[in-house]
Length: 193
Ligand code: ATP
Picture 1 (cartoon, rainbow, N blue to C red):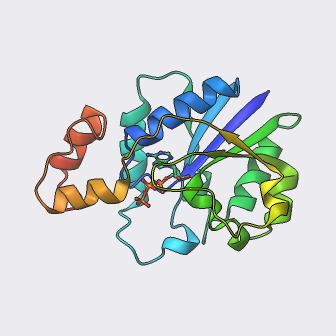
Picture 2 (cartoon, rainbow, N blue to C red):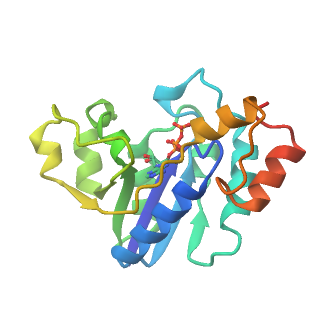
């Protein structure tokens, strides 16, 4: 079985996430696809990340109509800071004999050398890198990582959670940036204002 693992803060989830996930699942012929919301990514501590339960709630709304997508809350329920390596070990134990595909955006490739136990991450999972608007391949990336990652071409969608949070602060519309149910949830709960 081929399993896709798509980590992120999803603060909030948006159509960039959903379209990329859908295309990657299709292109890699994945049998299962998990969105794995992070509690607090180690490199994003102290930014405007809202409560994990609210992000999970929005993710549930975002994928509710797609039976191919699932959410795994391991990083939320686990104590302490969540590291990718621990998540992969969890999936390895949960789905023995499966092939794991860790899916990341091109922007994350810039930080790959900072990941805890990066060598082990590459042993356990196939690392799949999606192109992202405004991010090109980092020039100084270590060749040993580059040789081991697999690139998957997705449509360039210039949406980020940062931009959505910014739009809300500026009182601009987020219609068509996020699924309607997510938009309603954000407005109803006065998130990111
Ligand atoms: P923020 O703006 O808050 O940093 P983000 O929009 O980058 O958030 P994350 O939840 O951090 O969203 O992203 C999770 C994963 O999805 C990352 O690997 C990121 O590279 C990827 N991703 C997010 N948006 C896009 C997009 N529009 N196109 C391609 N990949 C994306």
